[in-house]
Length: 585
Image (tube, rainbow, N blue to C red):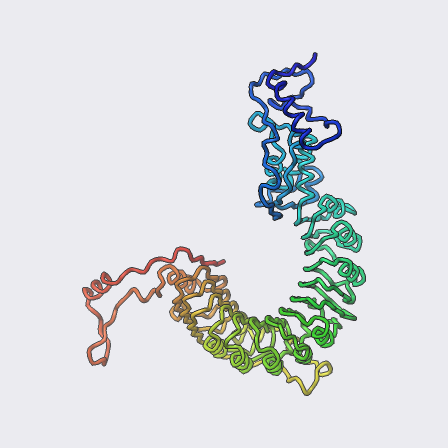
């Protein structure tokens, strides 16, 4: 049985041929879809009864109508792709692709609104699909498969979850679909080795940013040679972030394009050469193993010669000491603005004196885990009153509330301060591990360091902060705090987790813009007091007027009830702070 086209379809045939000729297609016309353009049923043995007329693809807007934006991110990840793709866990973000030409749109027949869907519109629909629907759409027909291929090829950013059961070469098979990829993020749930890194280098010639995260017990087996070759070959690479770098052995990175370098879980580096003249930010996070033999002093001393444009430096290691800090200050990094030296229990006030004398324009200073005292805070306040906006002093056992109050009074630009686990009671201090107090005299220069000592802090400490710019305050684990008075009109985030000895009647929060208060591990009475104050803006006792002072001020007497009622009725009720969130257990 032969198919007889309707008169409407026959009348549109010359128009389609003319459009194809105008497009400059010199060869024969390609075969179209095998389904009807009106009802979607197979054309073979089919007589279409639909009266609607197909829509010509020539009406689709041209690619020059607007400048295309290439952003790669889905609004939501609604699941893994179907079938085998479900095990892949591919995450393809939203992307703008070049508009399909009239011929391709003419070939892709769809059932949207009972007519042919132009290729440009179909691409706009497909690029908004999550991976599961996107890969399923590739199996509809040849035209749709070509449009899905356009979405993959035009992607500039890709996020992939590599599951534990993935086969060898899975990363390369996915990356070969994305010829324009410039940003890649790999969530590794299986081991990552040199073969995977070579697939990335081969499939992404224009890669600019790469991030590798390790999850679910996976192991990063990359060694120093493979990483050095990868960085040297990628001439356009600007950002590199890799977790689980415990097997590197040594670092030998040379790149003129690299701007950001993050390496975590480093261990026992025999040699460290980072020759990146344009590097702006470096983060080196070492493991917590006791047998780490990395020479931090030599590494930090070379940064001034090989990376002169560093602005942000973050080093996390238990082997940080005064000698390593002196080596860093001797590097003379003129553009340094953010300095983070974490977990250095051997860092004392002598290192602080070296920092403030060498770098006078710091905007962020993080000395968490060090053994600096209130004297070191005084040095910081004397040098950075006009620049410092973020100060992090968590896990510093020699700091008291007096030092924190002095910092907030002397640093007017301060927006964030973290002093968690610094003001602790005697019981918490006695439970602290003693290995952090040990001092390796052989590894230190006796002329440039002092022996770190831990002082027992007073049990009851009072903290009063009045600051006009402070936005975030963290007091987590400060069990020695007995009273807290805050007058911070810009404060939005307050952390009071595990402040076990803070009395509710000695808490005053005058912070009208509070948005989040964390009070996990606190007493129920304290949680109730915080709840009352963040909702009403006033302490609970402020609503009662039980007493009145006499004219001579000699003593107080109970105020009559009618006076209390008159004053209460005359006062304007405070508006509730409904947007503030209280986080508890």
